[in-house]
Length: 498
Image 1 (cartoon, rainbow, N blue to C red):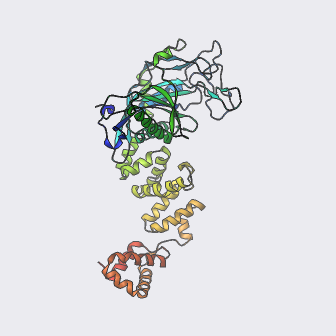
Image 2 (cartoon, rainbow, N blue to C red; image 1 turned 90 degrees about the vertical axis):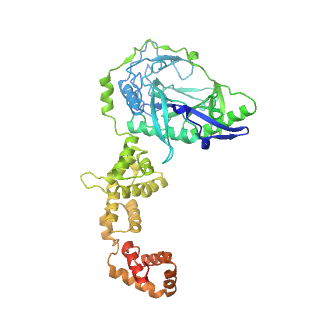
Image 3 (tube, rainbow, N blue to C red; image 1 turned 180 degrees about the horizontal axis):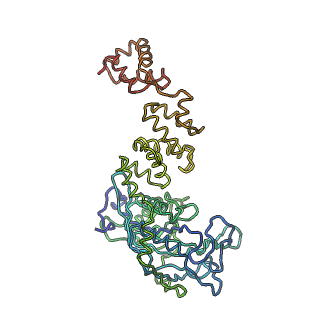
């Protein structure tokens, strides 16, 4: 069964005045290819240069200039196709897509139309630990980016910056398989993760390196597909979710008032939380596509594809399955760890340090996710900027596993390593942070607490859950250093609790 004819999920329907509506979403993601040079010229793709600094004669469309294909961009597109479990087409054709824009000096964009480099594929998207959807990929084609028109630098003139002109883009087109704003956001997150693992696009949406055109239509559950509107150039995952919600509600309102939806291109305004009309939607024939006469069809053999396939990194789904099997992690924890390649690498360096025996995977995951990621998020840092190295965190996990420190002391130790650095084992030695396993010393503290609180001793016999109060007092008395297991056993024995 095709995903886009899957039965309507009641939880994902939108309530309207005349009953429930289903939103149907397809995505066109424009991903800037990670390469040093542009698709058809040797000009730099570096970000942040002065306007028109990275423009060759080809990018500026000077007369007689001919495009020359950048082989690395082809390799990156094929790698991406392989990462999307997609059909790689050994023969593809570049077409001219004709339209006028001030920042498109040629008067056409070199793109691919009927014969793209990558055909159908699919992505598995985790919506929750228990729910997955499979989203079909229609195609991936190569095209060049346009420049940028700047309207706010002069009262009467617009300026054009051609630095982006000719930069290589992959347009990744999904099937209309998404059914809610949450699914749309999860799909883009997963696609971005795959691209970053592959190293084919850095996914930096703030720089415009990953942009989404979101196609939205609504229908009665199980009905025919409605008329779609395309929301152009949405540049954040949060805005994608908001744009879907706003556009779906706009369309439902129009249809319920007896109107019809015009197929058009719209923009999302995050300030107002609404979409607004940009232009009526062009059809393919309006662009007068034809094969680019300056470029031969692009052809490569199976050996080229196999060579790229053999060098692919382990991708998120395979890594997640391995983490679950190898380290005994829950699907949720494994998903969090593989969301970024750097995070997964950090976890593995903690759980399985090179040349040493492996550690308890679950304990390592808990410390990486809860303590480290929690603190990094709070401080707005990335795992690559962590002040605590994998070796330091691993040392801390070892100290807990050996019973040298308790979980409570470990949190204090983590704080010291985070702010001051140093070797965890040496810090514990130097600062006397070892937990007390000497039962004589623990017994002495327990005896004093029991002697001082006869009323609580009576209460605990009737209500054994009060044992926690005694544990807390004894921990306080030992400065958090008493071995919790030994402490519990001594308390139960002294208080006569089974």
